Image 1 (cartoon, rainbow, N blue to C red):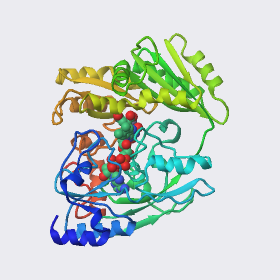
Image 2 (cartoon, rainbow, N blue to C red):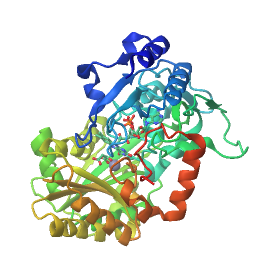
Image 3 (tube, helix red, strand yellow):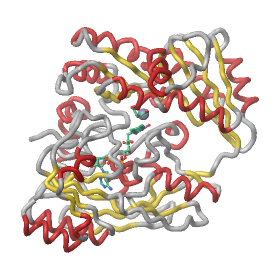
Length: 455
Ligand code: FAD
Ligand code: MLT
Ligand code: ZN
């Protein structure tokens, strides 16, 4: 970064928070999957909204591109530099206000999900979105990527949790609407616009979250089942019977093998099943009787083995078999992570055909898939490929579109999928998104190369 710009940035955030030394920059320059990396001019760590605004004003005037970064747990390369940008790390914006009586709380964009959970749970409230990266993922990053996670069937994605927000435009203008009102019908809803914008429209600095009540009693069941398609079909039937259903996740035998091997967890059953379905029910009263009834009515002959967790420790142990898939796959190599979605009725077809289309274009690769089955969302992880080899990615994304689905159900587009955006959304949608981008960031400094393909 030019010495005079560096001095100006240091005057805003303090010299300790402008990192130019390569050793200090390194963790900000590589993403969680290790597939995406690039070198930054500097890493700048503002400590307040006013500092964010002042930094953006300087960078916009100098036409220096900016990569906003939260916990850097994103999976599509949008949180790390491609080369020559300033990384704007938001993790110092982590103050949390008290929870109000209506169950809303305003938190800094850099607060981690775990920190917010710990802040609100003792008061009987919870955050509606939960995900395995909770210790590092930030609320701002979760809004910017419209994160999904393991409660979507119950509470929706991150977009649905955001009641208001504060954000800074590329030129330093601060937008602030933190209303504390369920009904606020005064025109365009900025949280909806920024949810899923992946750092390309504004930098989110504070978020007002609408919380959900804590559910006192929970039960988790893990079952061996014949296929991912069977798991999706059964989960759909259970959903109709179970108002208490809060999660439905599926994974395959290959995934469980990896977790047992890499995370050192014990296999749940003595027999290896082709696939596994994990469901959680929760409510004010014990949900086990209704789950047991529903399984008996809907799953006759389908389930080979069932493990049930009622106490917290057993529930956690069953959940870890699912949650630790991500790190176990990364322990086996650098995966290509394809987070596709299809209508729930086609999940089985997607699960069967994805490994076939990968084998056709990349015979040496192997596929591990799992996902949020009731969201129609499978994570197709392809191992054994060069990071630059896109043939398997293209085959899977084409398959998802041909099944009436989407190239990204929850991780976003990032840099990984820009060239597929128009095939998914169509030219008119992409043009509309470009028009919004141009209006809010006319110099194009916010996360260039992310989300929108080059013109
Ligand atoms: P980052 O990775 O830092 O950034 C993500 C994007 O948001 C980037 O484009 C970045 O530029 C932008 N951004 C970040 N902060 C801001 C801000 N304040 N203002 C504007 N733009 C910003 N994702 C799911 O959806 N569901 C899951 O179940 C899930 N599970 C995961 C499990 C593991 C183990 C891991 C490692 C990741 C998982 N993820 C999941 C992906 C990831 O955690 C989410 O996408 C999360 O929302 C990213 O938050 P972050 O703070 O790490 O954002
Ligand atoms: C998950 O559901 O585990 C996450 O989205 C991360 C991943 O795809 O591995
Ligand atoms: Zn996921």
